[in-house]
Length: 78
Image 1 (cartoon, rainbow, N blue to C red):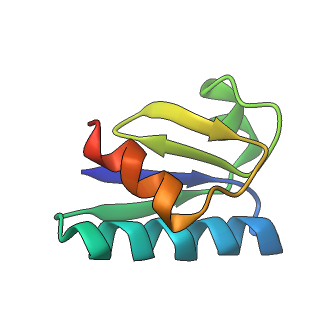
Image 2 (cartoon, rainbow, N blue to C red):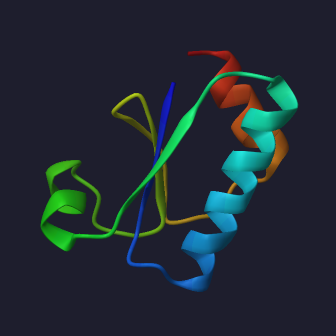
């Protein structure tokens, strides 16, 4: 499973990365986290507000930092 963090590296982006890692580890799934920091790449996803979370290329959250519990629900649905 590929988890992408779309953002420039702000504190919210770092919090989202930590929450996503915690959620994936709690579920015990195999995952890869990729940070997408290039604005042009982020815009290709149709994201205008960061941070954003994409799972396997599908954008799930834009402009906020969901809790690990919220991210676990998203990961379980994939």
